Length: 290
Image (cartoon, rainbow, N blue to C red; front, top):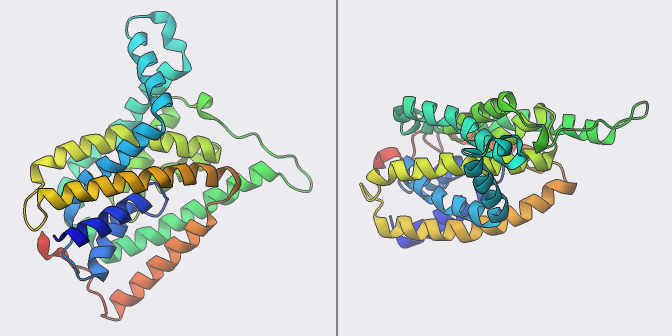
């Protein structure tokens, strides 16, 4: 991998990690469209450490408060009803599904799941799911001619059941094209949470899963055509761009809907099917890297 490729892929990772459009799919598609070798699951997982570092810094006050309360709750029974302590446990509970399924389906994640036809399908299907969830949220918030708006849930309403559902939604993102934020935000909206609550928990829930995945994949870094230098460079780029995207996205969702992302996903998925169907793009383009 050249330094230019690592710069572009780091930029793509930072731009797409927190938007509901799938960073893993865009890294895969960037390599395919540019006729580069697929950077692989290890490169993707490690560059995600950069974007998760951006989450740690952006939400540093929330995370420090949650971690502190969680540790105190281990020895102080009076802290176990504290909201931040409960959030610590719920992040742990919500991380279990992706941890288990990630190990079970590791071979598929690094192989068959990277087929461009599957990515096109997940882009379209999850785009439709996100669109439906967004419309339901908008209807609840605005009400209608004959009914008042419906109060949606906040993170203070989050319990173990909803935390596990969030976790299974996040685990769906093991398939490129689904999108970690897209799946968890959609799940949150369908469960009745506000856009801001769904996005915030989505970002917090991703921290342990992504960091663990990145550390797990370190053993495969530097193998094949992707060396350590370009991987680290891409990770730094992903961090810087990712931080800016988080700041923008959290402001965007307070007043805007997810429909632009829904349209983008569907159009990209359809275009991908057309290119593969016409023979202009192989469904396994760029997979020679292994």
